[in-house]
Length: 385
Image (cartoon, rainbow, N blue to C red):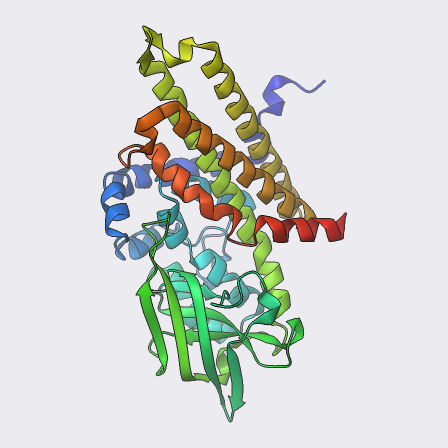
């Protein structure tokens, strides 16, 4: 029988180096982010000065090869980074500072050396901000039906169309953009790198959201944008497969966000029920409260462990398309339940903006939508069962 010591998840998945990274990130979040996060949430943005700070410290390069300016590391380095960014208590901050993690992988995997030099290294240094442009106003989850067109014209592509719900869209210097270069359907999609100063590229007003207030989210419009042909990422009309590949890591990141949202909500509920008194004793003195906390803790523990297990298999190069889809759905359902119950335990105070559980409850709602909805995940799972 395995010893209790050997069954502890931190010892199975995280090395001493991972824990050192965790402590370094936690210290920076504590000093640079937590004192200001409430103000940034209310103002709807965090300072762009954090990008060069995080770049200089090497945090933006976590998990990326050293040859493209990264600091190296495996999937569990990125797990650590995502968990500690979520310790800011703001999903918007974590999504905004981390938008490069969905924008850069297609360039790193499919791009040319020149593209990596121009569009990857400066982002990892915090000198440029990168965003991913896939979702369109009329498309939603139907990524095979992208309508933004890119028509070859000499040594350029002429781009027309629009993207929406783009994280970091208002402040991005560059967009890793899915466009239609071929026939209708999945086989006619390509990726282009489009810079914000391209004539015809315009950003609509920042979108006001239920949660993730600290991240800017915008619509982007293309009106006869002339994009150099060398900005094509990979092969023409092969972009759909890159989108599908990219989704797997994005879904892992969303699993981590959901698990951390639930974990922080549980922690806040545990603290509050110890301190808050009703009918002459702490809330935790009531069996109904203790049992609710037990149910919440069980769900958090199971979801976190399953996510780590799937991440370990991904780290080993084992295909986990079905499993990461399951993990995302389960993590999001757990976060739905735990944030709901945490607010309920806080009562009226859980509805007040000054309490973290209120923000966690709002921020949680996007997690089962972004990166592929719950319904899309179920379709993927059903096809692979």
